[in-house]
Image (cartoon, rainbow, N blue to C red; front, side):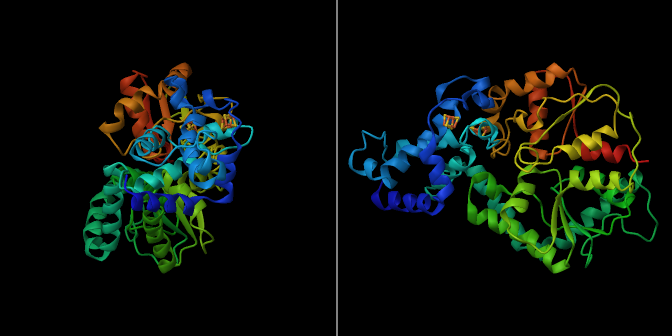
Length: 416
Ligand code: SF4
Ligand code: SF4
């Protein structure tokens, strides 16, 4: 590796080295408590898949370049130079971690391996060594945002083709628009994913609740966050913030996308509008009796997968259970403590990497498949697109015998 590239990468590292991250890098006592908390290690017990071993890849570089001992006596502190081999190690560590943060809940020091892996991802981005597909998806998303005025009309035409299906789920007055856009002062700006499945059920529910809502022109998903590029993450997030401010909405509601929700909720800073997940909004409608659901429309045992970014990392665990209570009398939880639920194994950009990550995603998530099978459920419901895709793949691979469903579509199908 050339010296000027190394300097550039170390500068990127230093820029991310907050006091908190330095503390995570200084503190690990190598107690090993976190080892079996990781679904990857649990499914594929190899030393390199323990959270502490992943973090060690970054920690060695930290010792070499940011600690005196590492600079002068590298062999004493297990410091390692930043070279091409180190880049390969960073790639293996970062892209075998889904950022689920389950390990953090078990670590006595609360060390956040996801944060440490964000340094690994940042160095890979600075070296142009990140997975090409993730950067490409982020770039497409950004350029789509830049040319929004050109594609607006096509988007609205596409929505008109979905209106019939929305009305089929919930009839509204003829003068009302089933999927409104550009509504100034709307109470809710709903940010969906590309695809009718993310728009139709939610539109029906908003209309059933007589909500004053408007649909965003932008997709919720933030590929910048998956690839760990703070600049691209910000650009993708800012489009939604600017739209919300332009329309002067009271609340931004993010669809079933864990990463999109967590990025906006926890990384956007103070905003003039409230930020909610669609699951919180649906629970609120039920609580306020703005919608009513037919119970037991879906037969058999129903279980719920907590998306890590919505549950463990954003605290939304009661709301989905509250909704499900109104959908069925036959609910079985996957684990006693939702905050300790196993990750689906598809986070951190792995699902977006498609076939490239398929083999790893399947093998590293055996523990999740076993957990689902143990419930004998016939419906596995979740509230995140990424989890839905991964769980559907696991369903086929491990013959779990469940139907994987979105919580919002079950709510829409049960509207009375
Ligand atoms: S964040 Fe999740 S995937 Fe990553 S090391 Fe921790 S438990 Fe494993
Ligand atoms: S539990 Fe915490 S302190 Fe112990 S090895 Fe894991 S990261 Fe290090």
